[in-house]
Image (cartoon, rainbow, N blue to C red; front, side):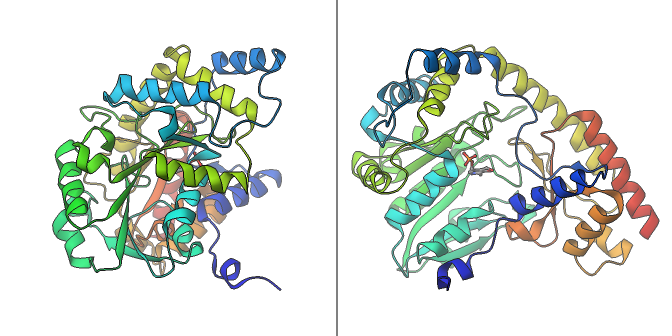
Length: 394
Ligand code: PLP
């Protein structure tokens, strides 16, 4: 009854794990979830106020242009001009139902059957499946912890073929939290220009960098690289708006027109009021963002210290962005006698009710991902339980 492509599709491990955690919670279990990638903050009040005002003014009640309301596209354009010094016109901007849908749409318009798409691992959960859904061939480019989990031209060169057409590059990275420097991005960009490989730069965590790292968008690279790059970004992480579903694409008009065409036959447009929420987020008070950002930065320091103290957990590089830690836990798995990281993670949930995501979800079977988008207190309780679990099984 079902299509081959839906039968072949692997469900998102992060989304599925959060459903398991909710179920255990509903059964009365004291679950601590370090699983999901979403801020624990409420959407800031100024955004809610902006939406309410728009709603009572009668805005956002009807269909909008498929590519998004002009005011929002203008605000996105201004935001990036102010932050990155590059001006995309509203015609070069497409508003999507979250970055996930933006990426899905991009795969639908760019990935032909048989086309090879470079996906550096560890990778965000949905890239591989979205490429497969479009009929493309995901080519996993394996990075090493010793290289800070980053790709470089030499590594790409080991995998390139004449069918390679796209590279999906995620910086700051989910799950590793690593951030590419301007020089590193430039080298990759030059390589892609030379090999006519289109870059999809997933910059979801662009505003969430800490310490010495700076937010650097690929759009700020020289023009020849920019012209071959598509930027994906969104509101979920920086504005605590995961439930609103709002993301966007910056690219040349030709690409944006194709996305708008797809939208005209699928979702019609992103929910009207959500678009006004995004408009307020970008044009209103920046202090809420600053407060959340400072809190994440503080949490990172705590989380890094806590996690590196767990026996058998190895995390040589302190992450610089996003809100995840991605330690190698193979020693802890060995010490505790489990067969695999997946088994270790499963038992941790069943015995201590701590949810973390196994690295296998991201193409890295020795690691786990812990999200610190939760209070320090809750995070530290989870760490105590993990330590108790390891001691108990050693
Ligand atoms: N890209 C990355 C790297 C992510 O981590 C996420 C969310 O987890 C997304 C894209 C999708 O974000 P959304 O669809 O909520 O905008």
